[in-house]
Image 1 (cartoon, rainbow, N blue to C red):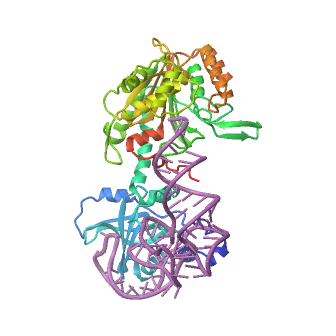
Image 2: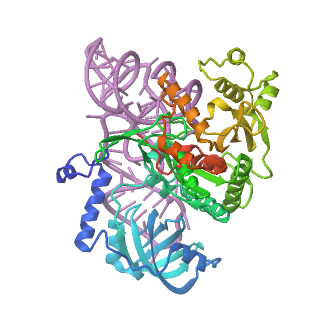
Image 3: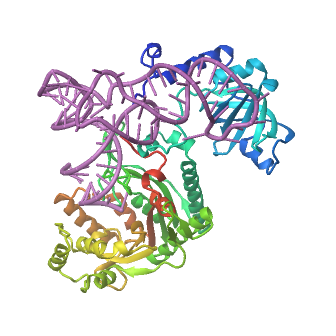
Length: 499
RNA sequence: GGGCCUCUAGCUCAGUUGGUUAGAGCAACGGACUUUUAAUCCGUGGGUCGUCGGUUCGAUCCCGACGGGGCCUACCA
């Protein structure tokens, strides 16, 4: 693929694809006659408005209404003395323009045929009519080039290849309704989430993305360097430790929607940068924050689709309605595995069980085996939204111990259609226990675990000033869009990273 | 990171069991056409068959390396 065609005057001469050379020549002619890229064109209305204001007209009707509209040409049908073009607005709405010899005159009709290509933005003004076949049209008195296109649009009769769509999303958005729709859905979901937060009296904040110590999750970070401070910086893997500082400071109900960066593998459900929602609620716990999470998602479904039963890309229905069940990790695992597993089950036994079902991992923490076993035995069967609650303590360093069960923490993961959609905690606010947990992590890091956290002294100091008992949650926005649409992550992100 | 597959015109795709001139539809160019809407009809041009190297009389095709992409797998959300 040659992307640097239009660089130098010399390049015009030689190896330019025919279609581009032809269009550049047309551009030159337009500039000689006037302007191929005028600063504006005298539009009086929009394609959407013309359609909305002229519904259900009979065929071959003249309304007497004169309008000026602009749009991108997506179909072109030139005949001898009457030319047709289909103009598309940014919304995807289309309308037909008709250019006849007796209205625009011989010269301008010839200019149209000579200079206008598929993909061009044009302005036409004239009367709103319907054609003999009943198509709502603008019968032009005049036309103007609004912006000349140099590259040809792909044909609109075959689906674009997936790679082409991702690499040229701007073209995908022009030619594919669904691409535009997904952008719209995403925007509406964001509005809905913010609306729910506002109703619940949360404040939206923005915390650092460039951090000197990365914490709040376990993942490999992207590294960068600050010239001014001459120091290594990390792109954040999570905002958690800063949002908790905000809660310490008295921002009792706080949320952030922003990007996280994780230097891990990319696949259908993982992107190196992804939009994350985190929320914290002083005087709440993992139950109240689960309630909030359910409300956020159900409101989003209702606001965007008007139902909790959302229809996915493949035609299946994702039922997000009702009160979502909360199942215990240890109990659901014990049931599915046919063996009683508790926080007291020795690691050797867990290892043996894991090995017997083909999970071969070496890890010093019993909790890791429990989570792996749970994913093996239970995860696949969870289709409808389900909160899996009460996780092993040793894999959840930022979560408080369970109020009554020993060996587990007050943490849930929300699963929807087999994917982890969100996670929530009763937050660990005891600075002494938090320090001890961090030290364990750092010890692991020293033992060669690159994802273990470094000690964030300033965060610990904040806790020492007293963080109220709190519930907190984190939710992947891209994944929420996936749950609501059934699309892959690279379709829910408008411009996903490509090499 | 490992395994398998893939890359042909502006776009979507055929095809060549190694042979002289690599095809289609849409798009483009020339012509005809005042009611088309994937307009139609006649005619024309357009390709380093991902890149580099090897084998061969001859490579788009076989082999190797590199690059892009996909699927599975591993890690993470």
